[in-house]
Image (cartoon, rainbow, N blue to C red; front, top):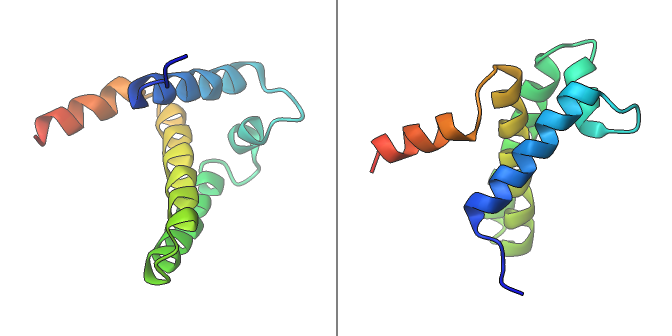
Length: 99
């Protein structure tokens, strides 16, 4: 079995995020971000928190923790894109423009 590409992983993750946004299952952390009483501030605060943790992991040269925190940032960033009715294609288009 071949490993999924980064594109496939991001697309699958974003599809799950969109599904949680639509279905709002009670036991879902992702759904809780969409229904949080703080609104989008909840995910914005998480992005700030995860950014600090990423910086500290980099400072400590902790590669395992750095990868973990980077993944947390990507996840919360995708949730924010979904909240703003954007998607991975918007992100790809912007990155493509910067090449």
